Image (tube, rainbow, N blue to C red; front, side, top):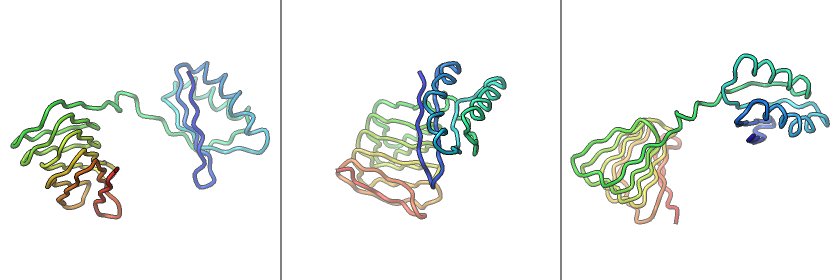
Length: 181
């Protein structure tokens, strides 16, 4: 299977491609992108899975043949980097857990329990403990917050109460909490 996602950002095309076989990608490339470049000159950034040297050269030839100017190529991370950690059960008072990937917790985070993570966390239960997300782009999704202490990136710990499912994220050097109901 071959997937193309084409977006225009600041008047420049960004094309994300995923495929199971490079040969299928070559066939689809001509069918899907070449018609766009026949109307006007096309320039684009490409987001591709890792390619071998031969595949990279073939990709450059495809672009030249289709009259597509490359603005840049970003290689996607291998899928093993995108794994998600699942934790079932409550995280009890006094427990401290560290996650190194995006995580789902199917249970509650009790008071005086602490979770630290390098990825975003979704907690399908009540959060009344401490959540420390190490990177500014991380997000906390929670079913309910009750005196939850949260820090994301370089922000200070803030206490949140929310009776509805919500999202906490870092923006403009402060934490924002948005109820999804």
